[in-house]
Image 1 (tube, helix red, strand yellow):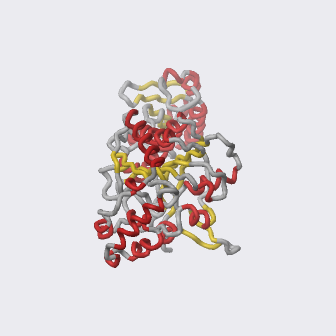
Image 2 (tube, helix red, strand yellow; image 1 turned 30 degrees about the vertical axis):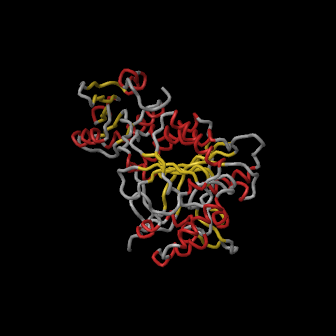
Image 3 (cartoon, rainbow, N blue to C red; image 1 turned 90 degrees about the horizontal axis):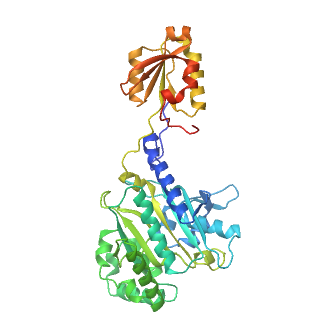
Length: 424
């Protein structure tokens, strides 16, 4: 019978890889918690309309990349291509908003986009998101950026570049759109890719986000959005830059940075690495005032970011599991049941270790104990089985001792001075 293979773009994460994701989640909980954020878990499946209304129907994400399908009642459903829209939907559904209240959430999980798989970005990919609702002040933007930097720093990732831009607001964006339209009118639009020829008419800002080299060359002289923002947006952005500079966060300005989702306005940012190839962004986000209201909620401002866990994992050193306290070696079949019971009683006391199933030679068992990096090898052969003892061998080279099993359980601190497990 033919084997069933994994779906293209959907990867399995074995313990060596999963350990990096667990580390990122652990550090995110620690760092984000210090900033007053709480964890929110939202579904991976939402109504398609949610993403069409929030991300923008003219974006590549909605137009080309979503996994959408009708349910049994004919309603269009979509596997989430990003997390912010779902978090906003949950925030609106909850009815938790109160005037003057600031709400802060973070979430982890898989996202889905039907696009060409590439290094660090498969069709199922993973993100860490953080969102703040109810704070319009530039201090919220600065705090968001500083929290992101603290999280990345907690992973030992300090050689990253922060790029910032301002996209203006609903009041000043029309003037920039008009300037862009005029610029594109001076070009031979037939030289643009098919998608950008459509975007010029429907959403010219999206042309600036095109990754096709020919399009990027054509728009390199396009007017910068930062030169068309209103006075309020300019003061807001200057205040953000002043605060993050005072806090010591190194950054640069990128007037071409527009991000790929329509809901962004005012402050927007990306964090990039020079160590993972052309797709260098490992995190990004910005302000999305107006999105909550657009999805049927109160008119409260919002700002947030997403970290690409798969790309961050490429930058992390391997994460080693804690050294197990013991490896229990069985040398005689008659000792199997007693050995299993001893291993269980050790684990109940907070120790961690593995039981070697089935009888085997002492040499092979010691080899396995070394491979497991166990600090102690417990050996039960025929002699130990009949005497009710266990041979305790220190794998760091400090000898061995035969003791009664009850003695071992009663004097764990003597034989395991630094247990790895909880509870002791």
